[in-house]
Length: 471
Image (cartoon, rainbow, N blue to C red; front, side):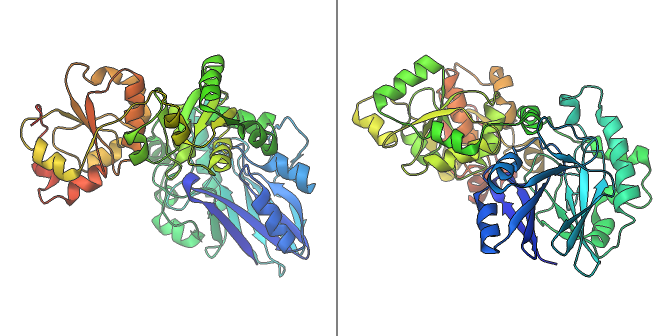
């Protein structure tokens, strides 16, 4: 059986494509559907079905655009209630894609409509299982998202459903079945996913903590809920977009690809109370940027961090990008529901400086400068990595304020004395630096290369002492 995994690293997202005898199907597509259409045209195939494993929280699916552009039928599992035309399948219902068959297995737990799809090849052999967010490689889906949309669906109730789904629907299947999950490491939909993006069910039974044979339901619920972090604020908004529908991506791009002069950019900012999102790299942003702009670089986990930092998907956004990167930025924003880009700075940041518009800068130091200047009594050190990263290893005496919690902990940053900021490699700390600047804090320095660079210096990290004065 031929199945193609289409993996998007910045979202840790996997979509799947199958084709047989001129008929194709796509599972859990991303918002931009052109890659799937191109793939089908290459096979001279019609995309007959778009199968959705559930109403996604971490991205906006491309199912509606595929329905419009390819004439595909959208399929959800039992109990789904979309606000548009779709097939709500019955448990164990069979769909034919050429000589292949797709069998619906209702597996509630991550959400109540969560469904896995059993792939059966042309010879009738069960080949693989599209698991969505029900079963990952090394983990299972978190059960605490649905309650942000439907309050009575508590995480304990959903965890209990997930236990039953795994034990009664998935684990009895053949050990040689290939597991095809919706996400890999880096996704916020689980807590300890593997970097691997496929595996056999038999191997997962041996290594996945949630599939331990002797685990009771009570133990499963306790272990699953332990250590879950707060989900990003945009998750419930994405769920509602996937349920209710959304604008075509073509419309979103057309609205966002509006070039603005420096003067027009300023006017749009004031009239629309728009956020200025600077997508350049950390180095260029630090050297010079527009006051009040937020830096989230395109080269990193751009969409995920936009979702963490900008709370409302309906927020109007003005872009500063490298010339030619405008459509990429708009598209990646739309993947997580940020459809209100209203224009970009024509000519990039250089056009701003050419007009002698006001700018701000952020001071940065190298890891060696950190070592030389701060191995005695120096400023406070703030580490904006995740708590798990900080707990694993950190500069002695550093204060951990995870980036996604920063705006709720501004009180911890001193206003009357200097401090140092770092993350793992410099990407997240520059996001933090831009937020701090927007909140009136500017007496700090950012460490280039972050903790990774600090570790490369010849003094062990464990020997660093949190400094309190600058040299």
